[in-house]
Length: 254
Ligand SMILES: Nc1ncnc2c1ncn2[C@@H]1O[C@H](COP(=O)(O)OP(=O)(O)OP(=O)(O)O)[C@@H](O)[C@H]1O
Ligand SMILES: [Mg+2]
Image (tube, rainbow, N blue to C red; front, side, top):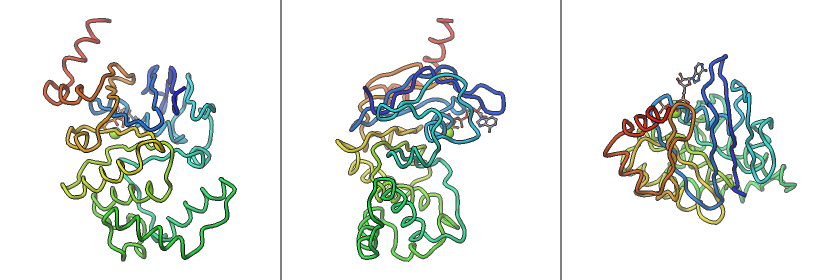
């Protein structure tokens, strides 16, 4: 059984059906890429996996670690080891980066029945993770994502991943808007934690991150469903040919 199994998922937003019977597996320790045209439902899928309250699952199931989480609260999913890096990370004025990180780390430890992290360990872990994510120390005392540049916000998402060490991460366009150095930071971060410990679903429009984080499986989404699945070679093919040939195949089969 895959770490995350999605079966026949139908999702509505404000009475409009966006996901229309989607099946998808994310395996432990493997990297999966999810591609597809704008508006095909990729972010909606990511938000549904995390349990966004505005999305209504009308049919189908999401199973994580063998447990049905279709109706679980977002924080319960997070405590079980699911993590998502958002396409548009939100700012939290009034809450510093250090405070936020400590809050989320402690919430996870509490859920695992562990004591709160000591200040000394927290400092040590944060410093190491910030260095890896190329985030200057002074960011600890800034308010989370408040006034951060697009690239800084994306690196902040990877910093959270590094601190939480989830067992499954969904990265929604974490590569968009990054310069070459920041892209490398993000790719290195993913590569460091992927592998035996973490499965990854990486949503992207671009080949360049998939050269640095090579996917085992590539899924293509179109109109609320997964319509194609292949190996890494599919990435180059999509980059070269676009999505037209896939949509033609589907329309022809109708
Ligand atoms: N709150 C909402 N109200 C109405 N429609 C919505 C809402 N959220 C999403 N949608 C619609 O659902 C469809 C899928 O959107 P989604 O953001 O999942 O696409 P996407 O594949 O992530 O696109 P992109 O590549 O541009 O990020 C779009 O047509 C969008 O307008
Ligand atoms: Mg999106």
